[in-house]
Image (cartoon, rainbow, N blue to C red; front, side, top):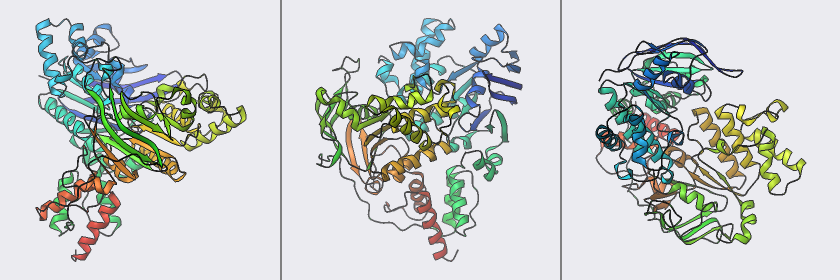
Length: 579
């Protein structure tokens, strides 16, 4: 299959007074794999939607295989040739059965029923969701919905695939699977345009385009683009892991090369004599932690089934869960996509009540409706897409709503709102406070929604993937917020797909697999196991194990969990060896 050519020339686009794209010119060759990077609000998603004729330029031209998208025929051709996968998969779910949802696109193209059935089967197999064909998309996890959205695009058999953060809600294994799908489709000749905040994804592309304030700031091969280290960091982005490690080693007096692949740096370090000493492998506790008296949140033999609550899926989403989240600590809840993490979060906030067992929040049983108001004072919930919780006419009213609902005075709620906005990085000046939250950028909306939760000052917070969809600068800011909350004594239950965040932030890690707790302990206990039950490893630990494997086949533990610890260990090994 020949890929589509996409040509954009001097294109501008505005949302009201906000100019999202300012004179962008870009030519994408048939079969090319282009990765688009940039901070939140830089224009990446807008650029992608112009390629699919979902948006039409205010000025300039967009052509797909020579057809101008500003014409009716050109727009129709663009939608046939270039299939779009949105940033939030729920935005393109239209039916109550997964297979029907995947079939929706081909049906609208007039494809024969027998061919549609073949395409649906192939598309679901490509994203490992065949078993979900007859499920209701509403019962799926965020990551599973993302895969279904990709399957729907693949079923249209496009010449170009436009991907807007397709891995934002996926675990490490899911990301690798999508990366393999992208590589396979590109090898078949399909043009790939991939918007991502994962810098390492860009290393697989033919070309990288970096957007900033609606313009192309950098363009070239991955090596060329990431060679501009200071400019990349100045744009609020970060280097891929192997380059950040090389930079950290150079800061420690080691002349490390700026490789574009981890294995290149592994081979270099090994050739220099860097071998990190092995330590006896350990096993984390099996995941049967009993509730403790000082627990902020405790689960005692908790099970939950969507079938029991009127859902269409019969298997238990959570089963036999015993877990205690100690007061004043941060517990990271990790697991593969669909393992029951989000359901557990909703159980912790009494948004769901267990089918079996009990959940207690600050000692309050979540099934006790008489104490529901007291419970709401204790626990706050930051959903996967907190910006969808916005509803008020102004930013100030939205952030004040929670404190007022909990009984704060107008003056107290106003003060809390300003303090919370400052905490999330927004300046609470009148111009912002009086704006509609819906007139803000996506990143600003998320910050306002988070401020609305923080303003309630609940002693327990449950956060479901709060960093998903954020650029590197946004993720770093969120880490600082979490660290500050923990220092202040807030009890935190953090759901994350980032093993790096779990290793860096958590006091304890709980691992779910198919709704069951399979491991629980400190980050070192969980990750240093001979066979960790986590869906991936922190990048520094994965690198360290690869490095040691170059010199020794022995199973290893006691390895660095953070980039600084890894750089220290390698530098010490090299200097100790006289390098």
